[in-house]
Length: 310
Image 1 (cartoon, rainbow, N blue to C red):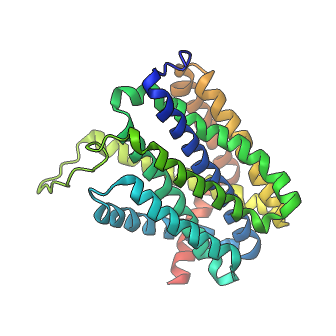
Image 2: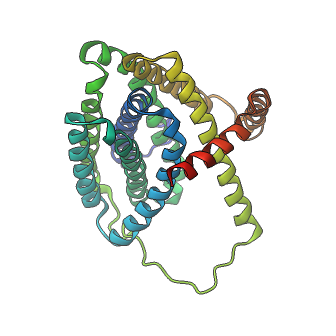
């Protein structure tokens, strides 16, 4: 473990967190591939922008409610309870999913993914302090990239033998495994660090220019990512009109993005990640937007769709 700068006392919790994050990411990837495919094939894909709006609104309320009801609660207990609820709900969706429930499943799968990942990092922060996290978290994050590669590669043979309609069983398997692993991490948890401090209400909250710039950057990034995501998914559903083929394509997509992420994380110098890569992405997005005028068309479409549903 000297190559990864892991000390003997850190070996077991690092391996357990690595495997746990691997399982959570695999569950997220398999669930997302099935969610996107079933929505694009069996439901009206023109409602996809509206799903983005609903997800943003519901996640804001869900996270606020989660923070309120889980304050100073044991994280592993929370992971067990919420994971059990997630597993039972996904099993019900697997056994019975009429067309009207597809949008509900689309939003619910996003909630499962975000809350599971958020709970994991809260738990990881209770295992390692800030100095340890700086050394060990990049290795743990690599578990997500490796998961994308293996999960993306495994989707195709799974569909060949069992069909895409059964892929949620694979999601359930890894979700339940992540819950089981969390209990093996308990001996390494700092009991004081895992409890979130009580919120201190402040009468005057000041947003300096730095925070405003970050907020604007996050909003722009979210808008661009959703715009590209919408165009990508709609084009994919037109090229692959069959559900099995579309799920396999999404699996291949996750596999190649996992390879690219792993390569950039361990082999590219930091300067290229902070300067060259962002410039290249901005240039490609600029060329795409100029060629398709996608931004103006999607803004108009989103506004018309939202008003049409009101």
